[in-house]
Length: 208
Image (cartoon, rainbow, N blue to C red; front, top):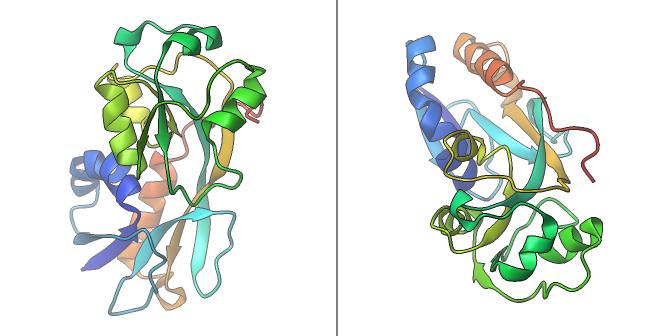
């Protein structure tokens, strides 16, 4: 048995849709998922591995970087947005309580980078986490700034569109495990799977 911990947002948006592929490619890995937005201690006989988010490296664990994150505006294609000026007629969706990255990829920062000065960046609906914000955007309730890594499947499926730039830099996703487990065969296999799946082309370096 291998227990992997990560945030609820990562597991729900990114991991769960890929469980079928993981089981097909690694049928001998008995994976259990553990959702926590707090940092969980990694140790043999407990939680073995994690997908962690930040600059790294992380004290007390063996870790490898997987992919840089980026944040951008997304919305339902039904809103018909095509350029930043269109925000003046759209509702903004906010994510409150976001801990990382710093500075926060919020609407005041995004509008400053875009040079958009006459948008009320405090107006709009507010949600306590990105999961609800993404669902609201899919439902057509407005435009949200979210991790483009986590909503990649929704973008590919046409549930969301990324109507315009700029894109804001985020932190980096890492695979981490207890140091004594670094060479265990199932850990090696799972780490290699994450490295392969998450090594897609990264966002352009023009992200700000």
